[in-house]
Image 1 (cartoon, rainbow, N blue to C red):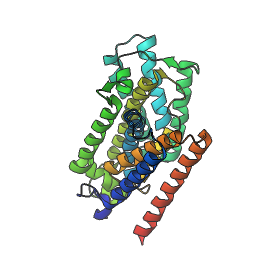
Image 2 (image 1 turned 90 degrees about the vertical axis):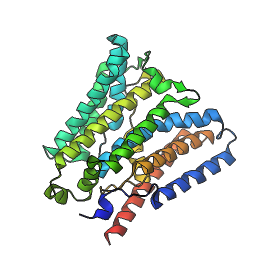
Image 3 (image 1 turned 180 degrees about the vertical axis):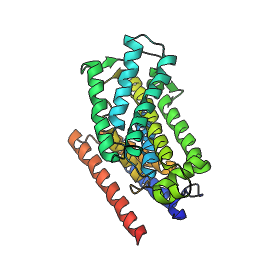
Image 4 (image 1 turned 90 degrees about the horizontal axis):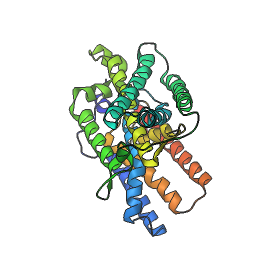
Length: 320
């Protein structure tokens, strides 16, 4: 097992993260010179609200990628959990204190279902989660009949509320990021995650319960996707059955930009958060510059290709 790649570094911020941070700073400077609205308090808070979901999803996605897997279902799972949350609060009349933990449990169970198929059945993660993606989309449409559900609940505070000028969703994102920094850097579970992604066979021979590690990664992703579903419903004040579609690619891109390797065994939560903020600022900047929506889609697609190309280049370089 290669210890240099399997375990997270001891440095607070590494060279790769400094490079991403520099790119983020350069983008912020460019946008501040290009638009008088970019540095306004209202816009900055809006950016925080937007990239909070990217950051939380990317945090969970990075756990799976580090372990050597991939999850394409997180976007539609997020939309489905938003629908389930809205349905239970509005149609069934359940209180938010009951609905919130139930939604997180449902998300974790769907994540566990993905993990079970990958670890016990031996299915390819790409195909497995692609199938789950369609199941989640179909269930969301079945529950709603294809029509968004109006979301009026105290849980809306998680997505649409503020603590002073700071969005609650941003506070949740900071809490999640801090928790996972501790998990990945300070716990045995975190070290095992990197070991499995770096060399699964060696990890198994060293006594690590590989299947359990992977199962926990997928379950964690399911819980975080459910959390994002509640946040999104609160932000929009409605639960759209198509909500969250495409966010799986944003999460993967943010993770890769942040230094998480698609080959597994490498990545950091701090880098992922910086990558997510870069994605959020980019999307916000494209809107402020009044670029047509199709150019925004093209730009995000280009960033995805560049991120994957960079990851492939670095993987080949390290293999030599």
